[in-house]
Structures are given as structure tokens and as C-alpha cells.
Length: 153
Length: 153
Image (tube, rainbow over the protein chains, first blue to last red):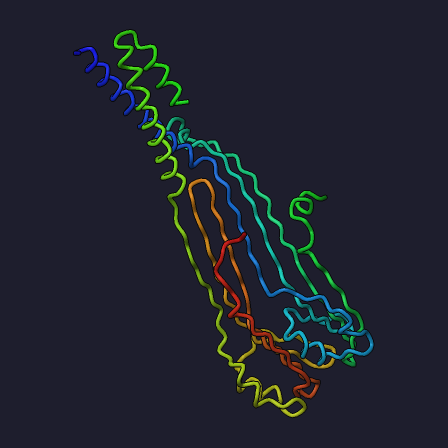
């Protein structure tokens, strides 16, 4: 009987010790591996014009009435450039560190890898001095896949 | 790993083997539950953050009603809308840009994983003036109220 009680008590202590150890390990080591995902969107979606604007016919007023105020206006030589743009930034970050090393050695081991990619959807209109559309350029960067674009040279 | 060690040590206890085995059956379940609880507590504790960043420019879209293309001058515009955020020289005059933006951020920090989402939208009015500083065109984009909180997925 006494042996049984001692054994049960022994197991209680051992179980408690293991649970405490597990809790400490989980608390300490869980903070060393982390993943962070960030997204930043600026601007509204840019619609590609489908036969709305014609070079040599569309005027500055037509574009402003249809698309509103542009995000960027630049004068290039004898042309005015209006740009409508939306940017989408994605970042993935993995981090692996061993916090216990701080306590043991006074320094930490930290390995991290991150990849950030900003893709632009842009619609650019070039106007001549007479205010008539001279050229249209479209860039649909958001259609590019994240990983392939990130690791592309 | 921890569970395995506890179970083996309990099973091969030289004295009170029967009691230890009986004890272990129930205790392993409790230990599993306790460990699961600890894992959940460790993984799910975190925080959510909401943030808002505003770049204010005190203009009202309703003020546009008083403007007449071909008559209103740059002086009239600045009298109503104040100093522009940016002035751009164009081939046939200037453009006055009035801009304000709202950025909304949402972040979720867990122990192992964290997510961040930033949405930036802006209100913008662009006035085009000819070489005599008379209003020739204007464009309006009001999207600041489209900025939204949310997660990046």
C-alpha cells in the first residue's frame, strides 16, 4: 500500500516536472520560429481601357472625365504624361532564432529570410501640347505570380 | 517526445508495476490534454492592432460647383481650395494638385505567425491651367473613404 502511494506520488512529481518543462520549452522555443506576412495596397484598381480612348482623338478632358484625377503628372519634353497607378506590396518573412542562447552565451542565433515584392498596375497617357492623346501605355503588374517574379533575375 | 518518455518510465518502474501501468493510462490522457491546452494557449495568445493614418488637406468636393472651365483663374482656385499639395509645370500651363490620403492598418500578432495589412487610398483633385492661368480642365478622384481594415488574405 505504502509502495503504491509512494509510486503515485513519485509519478505526480515527475508528471508535474515534465509538464513544467514542456510549458517552458513551448514558451521559449515557440518564439524562435516565426512567419510574417505583410500586404500594402495603395490606390484603387486601374481598369484597362477597352476601346475607350483613341490616339489622335481622345483629349485630356475625356480622360479626366472618365478616370478622374491621375496619381502622377509629369512633363516629358513636349508631352504631358498622366499616370493612374495602383501598387500592391507583398512580403513574406521567416525567422528562426534561439532565444536561450541569449541567456547561455550572451548572444543570439538568428536566421531569417524575407522576400518583398511590389507590383504596379499602371495606365499612362501621353498628351501632346495640343491636349490630344499621343500614346497609351498599360502595365498589369499584379498579374505576375509572386514567387516566380520574386526569384526572377 | 515528452509523452513517450513519461510512458516508458512509468511502464518499467520495478516496484508497483501494476499500479504504475493503471496510473499511466489515465495520466497520459490528462497529460495529452494538458499539453494540448498549453500549446493552444501559447499559439493563440497574441494581439490585434488597428491603426489609422490621415494626411489631411481641407478641401471639399462641393466647392467644385463654383468653378467654370475657361473662366476660373488659378487665383480663384487657390482662394477656395488653399495652397496646392503640388504644382507641376506642363507644356501649355500648369497643374495644381490637391491631395489627401487615409491609410488603415490591421495587424494580427500571434506567437508563430503574424499578419499585417495596409490599405492606402487618397482623394485627389487636379486643376489644369493654360498659360494665362485660366482653368482648362480638372479631374477629381475621391477614394479616401474606400480605405478599409482587413486581413491580407
